Length: 133
Image 1: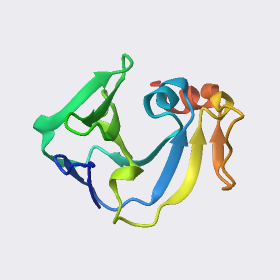
Image 2: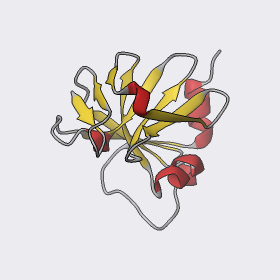
Image 3: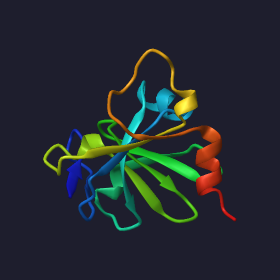
């Protein structure tokens, strides 16, 4: 899969992935005015134009990245594992994604809902699933 930001200064390549998810946590909603829609790419990403990327360390374990030229949201990255959750918006000509999971579902405001049948995890379930042993 090949994606790019709005201005094309940053390009990201990763093996094909079709399972997408939505995060309804407060940080994601504040960052993008709605849920963060992403595809899990793990650490296998190639970035061209990395010098244009700006990052914000949003927690002790993660950072969020955007293009410093056009502001396009690029990814959420887990620092301990280098796993990337890539914004689906950068993949305009990519595969057709399958909506699989919504996380922090208990933080989702009542102002919107998705009709898709997805796995729904609460905040507690997310931390139980991904917290280090």
